[in-house]
Length: 244
Figure 1 (tube, one colour):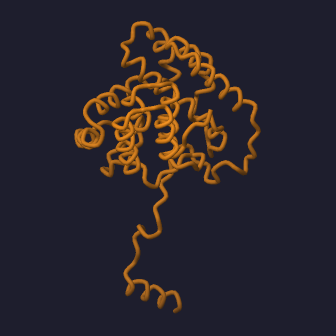
Figure 2 (cartoon, rainbow, N blue to C red):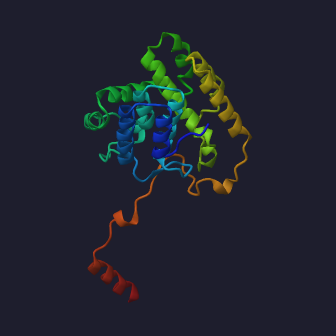
Figure 3 (cartoon, rainbow, N blue to C red):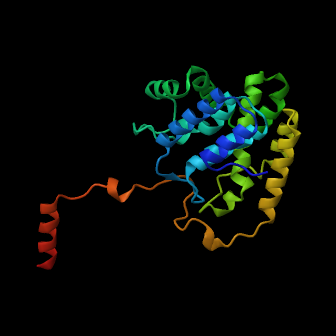
């Protein structure tokens, strides 16, 4: 199975799955919004961050999830690390909520907010696994988004190219994540997770291919044309000073 990494690959995947035009348009609008939140951001494996969002959406498309949840897959962590340009760090703020609602609608905005409460961590893993039978259909689908996010980090061995991957605990939680996938009625996803964790454990990646700056998360690369430049007269004065 080929996981999409570009918007075009995702659109083609959706088309081949027979998704109606209005769903394709909704995903397209969400992708365009995604690019405004991560325009120059690269993951710790060197991959553009938007590719990760596309990959999560692609996995959810393979699992035949409704278009709203495919869109949530694209945008899943915008309240965690999206660049809203307000310098206020992670979290949901009224101005951000307004931007999200304008871009993708109130329904998806509400799902993205709810998703933050369902992130799987080692400390809440047992509680989430135990609560699966009692969860609403919406929560179950959002937990599926979380599993797709975990899978996407491993499915192309991307995790092994991180400068520092010690914060990613997917493989450590592997048996429980696989069990949750089965509890959600997703045996295909359970198999995909099992295969991805096993492939990552067996792969040997040269250390030289890891991000050279050793980064753990995202890196913002600002184009040279957008960097602050000194006025010509200031540059000329500095040149004269250094010559002297």
